[in-house]
Length: 96
Figure 1: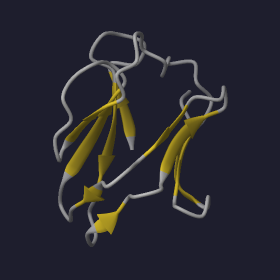
Figure 2: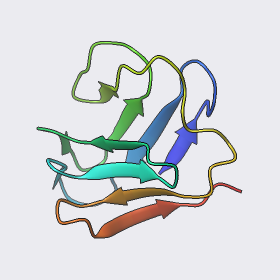
Figure 3: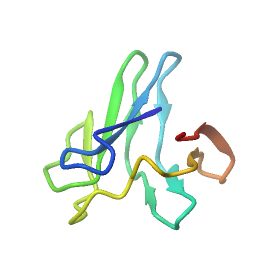
Figure 4: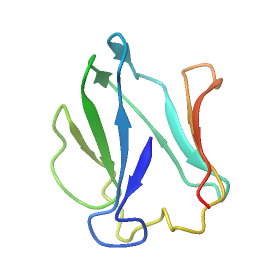
């Protein structure tokens, strides 16, 4: 997991999958400041990269748009957590 263009136009969180296909339905991505996105009807296929864009756009299988008005993943974020459908952390990114 990494942040692309943090705090700028075109900001996105990249999720890379190097194992088996994963059903992300009900999974969430959240930071320490209460920003949280919940995935719906989303699959992360083996060997693929999924981008969660904070800005506006039309979602596809590989690019999901949150449709927010401004970037939220600033470089000063201490922690970004990807959690599964029961809330268990799957991946944690600590921005330093």
